[in-house]
Length: 96
Image (cartoon, rainbow, N blue to C red; front, side, top):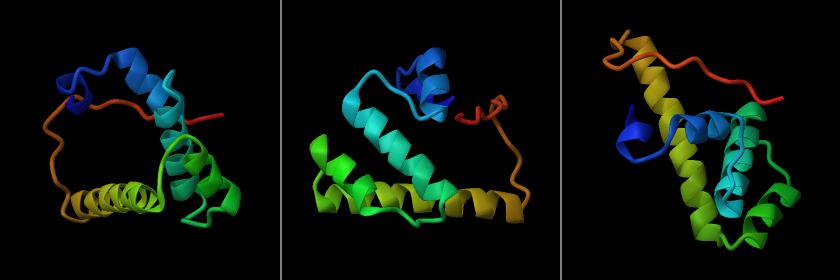
């Protein structure tokens, strides 16, 4: 729902869940975020270098990490307090 309100198509949102985008910067951020979550923040120098290679600086990389952490925290709070979902459920696509 939030993505649609921001003008992102359903196809783009599905691709984003799989870590894909036609935009090189967006694709790099999505891949990084997925690795960050899957590996519990155990990222490599190569992961950071990839972000730098598409134009992100260290401050921006920390901000990306902060957004990921905030989303995880929000999900934990929602689960802990059984917050009702007030928008249509979307099944998560798992990247290959």
